[in-house]
Length: 92
Image 1 (cartoon, rainbow, N blue to C red):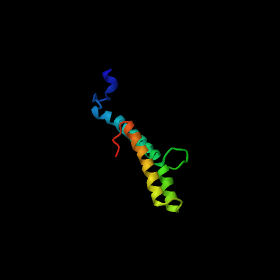
Image 2: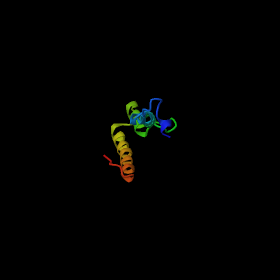
Image 3: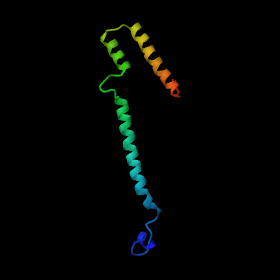
């Protein structure tokens, strides 16, 4: 068994050989994290816009006034805070 791990001079590859699989694992991990964050930020609602974005766009277009915008935004952010607290999130 010792001859399988040693080269022809009898030297061991050393513990640094473990860094190669760890480096590849780190690369795979980082790719997964970046992709998940990109999908999360873009949204995965099948093309549906985020409700706050739709509300902001309607306000910018003049379809709703400032009072209606504030009221609807309060309802949307309140329901989101409730979900975060229900999951054990820190809620703002």
